[in-house]
Length: 173
Image (tube, rainbow, N blue to C red):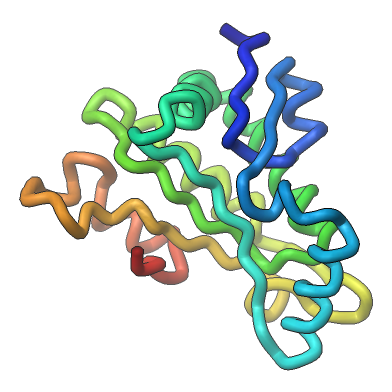
């Protein structure tokens, strides 16, 4: 349902407006803008990078449903990614960590499409307050949803050989 509220997703207002979905985020979204600014500026001042995560786990059915809904349609997915990257640039984040636990076999192709779209959209992050974002201007793309505690092969949730060409590194859980 496109008008459904997904209370634990992401603070991307333009995506929410264009998709008619309300988003909020339990971590960065609950920090006020001033606190986010301090954390990002302090990290950048010390040479650090700040990555904003997308969390869609099976343990949070609303976020999982939101990720499924967004990725089912290529236009909707492109709109979401473009809005997400624009948010990263506006706020000074260096990249995104995608944590979808775990796409079903039928969602695998949608997940891989979203990761390809993210990789292209992150190609030129630019600068924020004189700081070159990402890794020399290329946004950082990471993935946390590696099934570390599951005996099934990784290719059930994603195409490991292709994902390896798209992401910069895997974030440990």
